[in-house]
Length: 124
Image (spheres, one colour):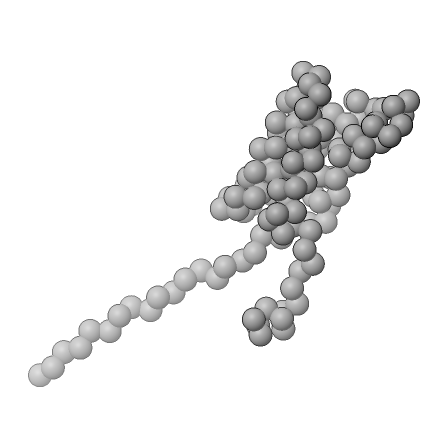
């Protein structure tokens, strides 16, 4: 009598691309926009509003990263945003660059890409 062994089904969790809600993207872009406004028009500088915008963006990125903990680009954006918040609190000049770095990390990760249609994902 011959016995054959069947391998167990190799069930894998489907790979889901982490997509950010548009609100999180807009909140992340507010601080660099205020920094740009301060560079172009120094009289319209609002450092307090920039600090609040960076804090809100950092918290929203932290919550989003908690939802998708395996995304390295989201962790990098979160780290850059929290570092920017810390630099804004102490008044360092590098804070706008760190806010911009958070936006670049989101862009590299594909957060600004348009979502693929279901048919396009099925055909790929």
